[in-house]
Image (tube, rainbow, N blue to C red; front, side, top):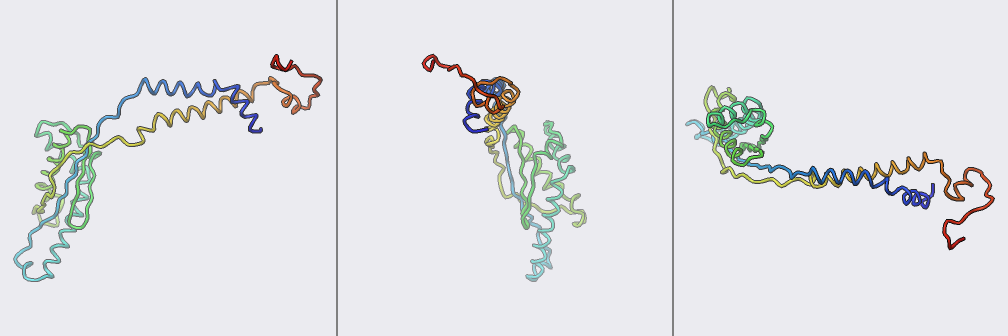
Amino acid sequence: MELRQYWRVLRRRWLLMIIPAVIVLGVGLVTYQRPPPVYNVGVRFIVAQPPGAEARQSDQERYYNWTASEYIVNGLNDWVSGNRFAALVSQELAAQGLDVPAGAIMGSLAAGNARSMLTVSLTFGDAETLAAMMDAAAAVLVAQNADALPQLGGETAVLVQLDEPVVNPISAGIRSQLDLPFRVALALAAGLGLALLVEYLDPTLRDREEAQSLGLEILGEIPKNKAER
């Protein structure tokens, strides 16, 4: 089919093509809701395990102490990313009168480590609850890490909090902004397919070219416009 034939089809079936897009656009505008607010807070911790008396005697011993700090951070990172840590944070919040399930905490928590530094990040939909969650996570991380580090023989690793927790709003992503236009574009594509399908199933002959394409001989033609008549 030539381009001009496609153009004729679109002119003839334009209503079928735009109806799905109009319906999708109307439903999208009626049911539109602003994305809920989302907040994030992140805090860095550094392992400040004090060296023993013998560790102050040589640079080599101090080097081993720094290396041990890196191993401790690796272990803490694995602990923070697990459900046991989330359950302890949930218990800490429950003691403050806040009911935040461990699953919600684990789903909103992200942790990372670089050498002797541990980064803990939380994302949640309520700023006040998020601040309480970070305080509880910091308290558990600093005071209850002995169970996660059996290599220390029951001692608690010394952690220093480097940052004050600051809750920041997260802007809605571009995905939410393009959701409705994307659905309208899909509806237009569906409408185009519907128009072409209806045209394909329509047995009506509308011009000389269509009749000749079937091998029919043209005996006469009645002009469409009065001026042509």
